Length: 176
Image (cartoon, rainbow, N blue to C red):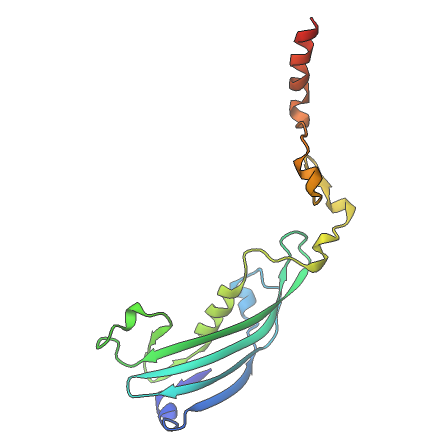
């Protein structure tokens, strides 16, 4: 996903349209939460003028992430639309205050690091599988914890087993 400035200048009048599919398997090394990632399809066009190069991108694909509840595989779709602007000289205008503005370094524009960051930012904090509601019984209880989905059971008052003897302490005093 690299273009030279000279190559882009050839298409200044008409712009450039592209549709590429690029593997991003190396993202699994940057974020170990990603179990697998499909090749990413990048569709876009490029507009050029004297001071800037504007990329209008639509990024699609799919990654497999672990469920936050059960660690089962969850297929998470990637669907990102963005506009990234590259500027030759950022001193003349107020480019630094705007988002998605990148300085052109050297004679090449490389979209790969920007696309990588966009994909990594897209990863949610928690992911749930549709099958998470059907948790096996052996995974619903543990030592001192229990997974409860029934709203009525959430509101019922329970005594912590560690404090059960303390609750009986006051009843013993009244009996004496």
